[in-house]
Length: 430
Ligand code: GDP
Ligand code: IMO
Ligand code: MG
Image 1: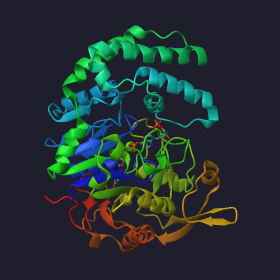
Image 2: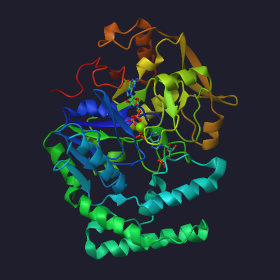
Image 3: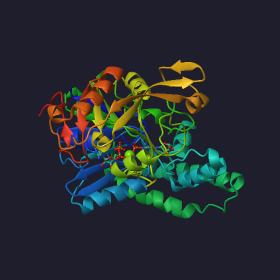
Image 4: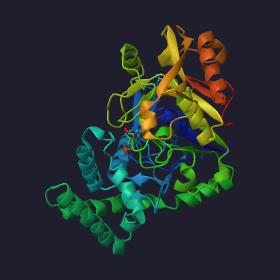
């Protein structure tokens, strides 16, 4: 199965970074096709923890080509910082990173605008990562965005950037009553980015197609998660891109039929950062326990993540929307030592029982989760074979499989690569 799409099946932070890093050792290409530096993908190698925001999680595998597709919004400053951090660790992306010339850029003014927008929303704020994602995608959709190709073309750089900064200045000054915007440092920074990024710029779509044509192993690394999808998620409490399995189709030009396997990354419980409905959210001692045990603090913003029981209704919907062929079930270790576990198997709104997710934001807010209780288990994180897992942990897996109709292909019991079980054998053949 050479082309694998790795998709977050919940509200992000499912552990995609670990899974992609693990599989990347056998991949020739790892591609990001949506989102931006709002993503925080953590990779644990030995004693060190590396958090990637824009670089694909193949960056640590020296033979993997890394692609950033046109569907990503690129904070060039953040990317250069990331490249520097890796260089300090002796990891170079020279000759193996391609950023598409069509990729739109995120400028500091996008972040300034977002801060103002969030402030104005008051207690209705989205709770974004403040990485300029919404404003950058808005400019792209409104066709006034600046792409990497514009930045590298000296005859277009000044005009496209100035037009965008003029527009941002008008919003900041007239709507948000901010001081006049100084364009000079912004233009200087844009020129610096152009110099630094020129050697990485290219055609990611062609590179991906060539790899697919050669039957190479390709990983499509989703950012965010299914319920943060702009169309299918809990709008307006969503991100501005498509984290679902269609993301690479539009975001890096992959023909739909070319995805061989959709690997849904599902955390054994749920988390969410930022505002918005979260039916199975817990607000008690168990949440605190899981947050501490699972180190559930945002990899990008450091915010404590909200914690909830596993939502099977949402997981099944995610499986169907994404066409998930197999689950990578993460953080099963975190659930150890709980006497009983709850899983949500339907929602109730008033007198109506729902077996799918609500379609309106009010419905999401009103949905009351109905739970089934399952017995917990004491200790299983050292298991390296499915048969070594305690019976109740295996029952938990069986419940997920039977409810969602999707088999578990990978079980993660810790942040490290070795803390993994592959109950159905290797996903990518050596
Ligand atoms: P991503 O955004 O989906 O890549 O996930 P994040 O990196 O934001 O958050 C996942 C966190 O859980 C990171 O700190 C990982 O190192 C960690 N992690 C991943 N898998 C496991 C696991 O199976 N068990 C535990 N305890 N931690 C894990
Ligand atoms: P990874 O790839 C979890 C959330 C934000 C906010 C909403 C909109 O690490 O799983 P945005 O900055 O995108 O406009 O914020 O989406 N969010 C994430 N939550 N993981 C992420 O990425 C996220 N990226 C955005 O917290 O609720
Ligand atoms: Mg994350």
